[in-house]
Image (cartoon, rainbow over all chains, first blue to last red; front, side, top):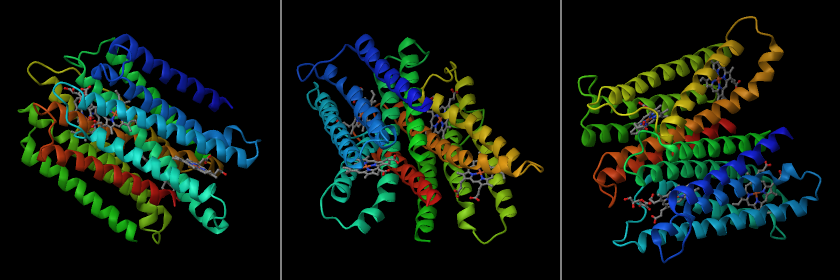
Amino acid sequence: PLLYGITAGLSTLVIVFMLVWTFHFRGGFAWQDFPAIQFNWHPVLMVVSLIVLYGHGILVYRLLRNEPKKKLKLLHAIMMITALLLASVGLKAVFDSHNLAEPPIDNLYTLHSWIGLAAVICFALQWLFGFVAFLFPGVRHSLRASYMPLHVFGGLMIFGLATAAALMGLLEKAIFSRVSYAPLTAEGILINSTGIAIASLSLLIVYIATR
Amino acid sequence: PLLYGITAGLSTLVIVFMLVWTFHFRGGFAWQDFPAIQFNWHPVLMVVSLIVLYGHGILVYRLLRNEPKKKLKLLHAIMMITALLLASVGLKAVFDSHNLAEPPIDNLYTLHSWIGLAAVICFALQWLFGFVAFLFPGVRHSLRASYMPLHVFGGLMIFGLATAAALMGLLEKAIFSRVSYAPLTAEGILINSTGIAIASLSLLIVYIATR
Ligand code: HEM
Ligand code: HEM
Ligand code: HEM
Ligand code: HEM
Ligand SMILES: O=C1O[C@H]([C@@H](O)CO)C(O)=C1O
């Protein structure tokens, strides 16, 4: 009850911080005509999909306890596939921003990109397994029951990976995008605060989901 | 059984990777006479303390099931306070490397340092609470029992924070310490592989601890 309020507040805060950052400090949004600005879709879409939507997708079974289970399963699955689609657009944006730059920038050289890509691939597999196990008709009940603990654990661990990827992305963008990150300026404080808000939101969601 | 073997193997791998990195690519170890080299104690000590020792401290109750509970509590508490001490030396090394540099480098400006410091402070508080609740004589049994779920959850979440901090540290050091991180060189691959090994080790430890 109180915890859900804090979750909603933190989610709003994270999205507002990301948008203020993008518009005020990073030049807003564009698509392939301006690859350096197209990049900005990447952080916003990744955080909206793999933190906020993912987090709320985890919580549907607890937020909407009184709805029929069948309906909740559908909602959970739809939220997760939407997150996967938005994340794919977010990845397209960053790959474009590298490949269309003059000269092009290498792909997949950072630890951020390795952990991030691993998180997205695991997320896609998790969706597939979840779909087959819990929505596909005719799967044996014993199979569903025995997969469930792994589904819950996997779902929370991939959420942890996505959170780590988001924090690493913020950190490296802060380093890349200015002459120096130190001494702290308004942009640096905004980026670091966004990171703290994302970490707090993730912890809270895992807390609620494991009560 | 198999999982403990993988845990031991991954831990060894992480430590070997860190040492190869430090000695082969980063100039080995020194103390205050060479602040830039003194820095190298920071990553090694943080990973040994807040990943490897912390992780094994979590697992003692499961690895050594047959020992008397009293003994395990003592071992767990000693491993955790040792981790805290080593981590403090690791922090001393990085603060020195900033303050003794010519010209000095700012402190606490990165998201890595904010998340990292938060992890260490929470870790110290967790130790204090754990000590008061479970080792200090004369605490009411009901209090111990009601604190336990929070102790376990907090211990695992702070472990997650420490893992995120370690990954962010590797990432930023990779960016700071060369003309360019891209295209990937042997050092870049080693750093990224160390990050993947640390992430896998942490996931595995949380998995074992929540079975
Ligand atoms: C869960 C969230 C995220 C995931 C899964 C993710 C994933 C990725 C991947 C796979 C790449 C490689 C693209 C390429 O090589 O062309 C990448 C690049 C990048 N991302 Fe993210 N990202 C996430 C969040 C963020 C955030 C929040 C930022 C903040 C600004 C960010 C900043 C960057 C930057 C600067 C690059 C280019 C440098 C590099 O390849 O690391 N990312 N990301
Ligand atoms: C990437 C996609 C997915 C992720 C990350 C994910 C994650 C999770 C998590 C973390 C939980 C635990 C929630 C809680 O304890 O309150 C959960 C529960 C569940 N998920 Fe998924 N899930 C995904 C896809 C799916 C799909 C496609 C289905 C198919 C309907 C599904 C069905 C379920 C069911 C039935 C539960 C149990 C709800 C309950 O009774 O507590 N999941 N999922
Ligand atoms: C759990 C592990 C870690 C924690 C808690 C942690 C904590 C910290 C803290 C509090 C600082 C700030 C020091 C200052 O401002 O003077 C710092 C700095 C730094 N750490 Fe770590 N660290 C960890 C692991 C690592 C690792 C594995 C690396 C890899 C090389 C690393 C690289 C750095 C670097 C380059 C700095 C200086 C730049 C900055 O202030 O961010 N750290 N760390
Ligand atoms: C920073 C310090 C500490 C951390 C991070 C920590 C973390 C943890 C974790 C994660 C667990 C769950 C282990 C499992 O499920 O197998 C645990 C269990 C436990 N811890 Fe700690 N702990 C700390 C300090 C202490 C201290 C000082 C004591 C005092 C003796 C203590 C006593 C216990 C006890 C009694 C258990 C329950 C074991 C069981 O029966 O499963 N902890 N701790
Ligand atoms: O925004 C970015 O900054 C770096 C690089 O351009 C820094 O030189 C990179 O790979 C991005 O996508």
